Length: 280
Image (cartoon, rainbow, N blue to C red; front, top):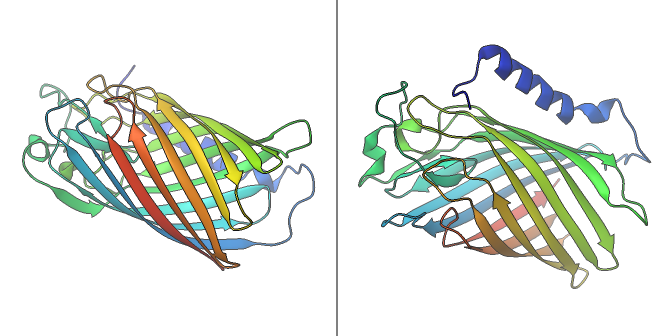
């Protein structure tokens, strides 16, 4: 894989992602909702693991997300995270720590050896803009199918290992199917990772598959598996399983919680998170 990304290729990818994000303006399948929906969400996530090393890496994130759903067909979100990461050999890639090895003979990476020893670091993470568009709506015989796209902007400090200092892009497809009180869901994504000079990172595929159950009118539980190719030759492929719960407090507010455990050295040993969502 050729490292680095030309200006023309970057512009093409940005254009492709934007086209997918806004494709709903020119294509209609089924009846479009006339109700706009705007929401704000604040969360807290914690992950810990050794990622195949002799040292545990603790990662705390506090993401603030603004979301907008102009109709039942398409959704947009902007996520702004704050990150604290303990001393490690990991760099945050696509929102998760990835074990890397610095190539001292190549590139002009600002990712230094300093963040790989005893220092913990905190700061703004990479801001992400994403969205989805429902290509086909669910029927009695077929699942809903939707296109996914996102751009990660390099706002995190790469010198602290909180990001790579490069743009990332993600394109994918998802589906879900309701069967009475159960919902089957999943997605497959191709993640295009920008590699800073001196750090070898690879693009990778990722998949998520799960099932949820509407236990009561206000509570839904889910279990799902996440698997991906490794973004670094120094790291194993991530594989993890998660349990989550979602509770509707009232018409304007929702709370959610999850726990996760890694099934490979490419994933955290365990993690947990909570979030509060307010609809305007």
